[in-house]
Every structure is written in structure tokens, then in C-alpha cells.
Amino acid sequence: MLSISKIAKRNIQRKPLRSFCLILTVMLLSSFVFIGSVLNVSLSDGAVSLANRLGADVMIVPSSYRFSQVEGIILTGKPSSFYLPDNALEEVQKLDLGIEKISPQTFLASFKMSCCSYPVQLIGIDYDSDFIIKHWLGKILSQKLREGELIIGNNIASDVGEYLRFFGQDLKVAGKLEKTGMAFDSSVFVDRATIEKLAYESERISAKRLHDSSSRNSVIMLKLKSGHDPEAAAMEINRVLGSRGIQAIFSKSFVNNMSQSLVFVSRAITLSLAVIWFLAVIIIGLLFALSISERRLEMGTLRYLGATRAKLTRIMLSEVLMISSYGAILGIFLGALVIPVINSRVIEALRLPFLLSSIQFMISAAIISGAFAILTGMLAALIPVLRAGRVEINDMLSEV
Image 1 (cartoon, rainbow, N blue to C red):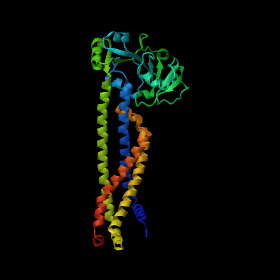
Image 2 (cartoon, rainbow, N blue to C red):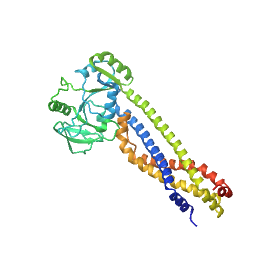
Image 3 (cartoon, rainbow, N blue to C red):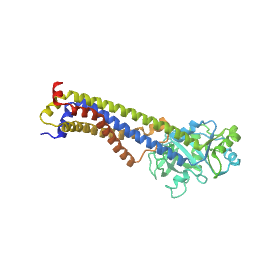
Image 4 (cartoon, rainbow, N blue to C red):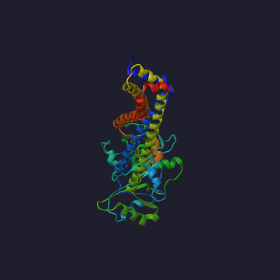
């Protein structure tokens, strides 16, 4: 006599279209749960990375740049070249703000031309005064970043010791940053002397003057002494220097804005998963109820030949388990293929930092998502299976 598993497998093969629909439903459920879990955690890790790496209490940028533009530069890494007015650094230093550390940065966009290896964001840092980038570089550099050297973001396809060309200048890769989930993953960092030379070459190649003086500061980062209010400092800078084309942004507003957006996106993902789960339960339940209804003669015959109600129930539950397992496994594979593709698209579309979860978490998420999909399939089919098991033999045979 055939075993329960063999009977279940034979029944699945007899109705390939319906089995395919059931497998497809479970596959989509497990895939969406897996992708949604990874997205939620990756966005959360990206927000934490942003908060930890932003480092400054106040950021000073040109007033022509709106908050959303500055946010886009930091998050998406769209190459941009912009400069603060002359003497902006000196003007800020004169204010009584309780400044502990102050450091300028220069942003320069490379060209999509033969003079440049990649069209990326070049960021020039003052290595002596920097208190943000240098902290990360200390983990990968054994000495100070020198003129003619660069540090590349994690997304840039190059290795330490190789050379990259920007504006006709060959620069040596001295280090590569760890993944940050922000625009820095697609950026290149150089010292002040190198960025000055590159800016000059950029103007020569494009025959376009980017700035009217040698003061090439794009952003000024401020860290305040303990006890000083960053928001009050930003307001004071805007009051005194706003007419000079300077605006100060309270850095935590980035984090707060990210947190609010993250909560909204997280709720949207959770709601979408709840809707998908509800639909999956209905579809699986209806399809299996229809399948059982069409097999009343078969089940009545098995009962007549001596199969107990418990055995009949085990046969049907074995079918559900097999179908759900096939769907869950296929769904995890689908999710694993989709996640790397949507990585950069999520950052660009949602304008949120995205730090892809670790392999260990994704393995755990895959196991949990698969188990959740299988359990959903079993529960959705449980009611029609139990109802079929309670029907008397005569009723099964007389309804056919």
C-alpha cells in the first residue's frame, strides 16, 4: 500500500494547474515576507549608520541649496559641485557659538569623459581639522592621507594600490571604506591640496570657472562644546550670516527626518505584508476547498476501503505541507535574487540610507520567512481539511 507521502505527491501531480497556483501563492508570500524583513532592517541599520557617521552638530551650506538638495547629496551621492561664499569659514569662526571643532569640505563632481575613471562625487577634506571622515580612515590607513592619494567608497570597483584618473590626474587608491549605506559608498575622498589641483584641472578641461576665488569650501562641519545647543547655534548663524548666502542646518534634523520617513516606510511595508498574507490565506483556503470538493468520490472510496479519518486528514495535510514547502523555497530564492537589484533603487526612490543586512541576518530571515509561509499554507487549508475529515462515507459517495 502506498505511503501517505506518496499518495499526497500523486495527488499533487494529478492537478498540476491547481498545484501551480498554490505553489505560486506561497512563493509570493514567502518572497514578500523575506524582502520586507530585509528592507526594514536594512533601512533601520542605514539610519543608525547615518546618525553615527554624520558626526557634526551643525552643517553650513550655500543658502541656494534647499534642505532636500543637501539631503539628496548625502544620501544618494548625486555628483555635485558647489561652493560657499568667500571667507565663510572665517566669518563662522568669529561667532560666539561654543565651537569645539570646525572643518571644511570641498565637493567636486567628476566628468563622464575620458579624463575621469568614473562620474562620482569627489570630497576634499582638511585632514588636520577633520573630525568625521578621518575617524573612518584611521581604520584603514596606517598614515596620513597624502597628496595624490585617495580613499574610495565601498561601491567603487577598484582595489588598494590601483590608480584612478580624475581630470587627467592619476591618483593612487590608498584605502577603501566599509559599507555605510549612504552616498559615501559611491564617493572618493582626497586631501585639500589634491582637491584644489583637481578643481583647477576641472575648470581647465571644461573651460568654465566654478568659483571666483581660491576659497573652495562647499560645506563647513561644526562640532560644539558640551552644553551648547546646536539648534540655537544654527539659528544664530542663519540670523547673522543668512544675507551672505550662508545657511546652517541642524544636523539632527537629518536624523529626525530620516526617522519619520523610516517609520512611514516601515508601516507601509508592514501593511503591505498584512494585505498579502490575508489574500494568501483566502486564495489557499479557497483553492484547497475546491480541490477537496472535487475529490469527494476518491476520499469516500478510500474511507470505504478502510482508511480512517485521521489517515485521510494526514494525506491532505501532507499535500499542503509539500506544496507550501515548494513555494516557500522558491520564494526565498526569488527574494535572494531581487534584494541585490533593488539595493540602489531603494536609496534613490525613498531617499533613505540603506545598509544591506548581514549574511547571518538574511539567512535567519530566510528561514523564518519560509517557516511563516509554510505555516500560513497549513493554517489556511486546515479548515477545509478538517471539514472533509468529518464527513461520513455515505455522504461523500452520495454527493458524487
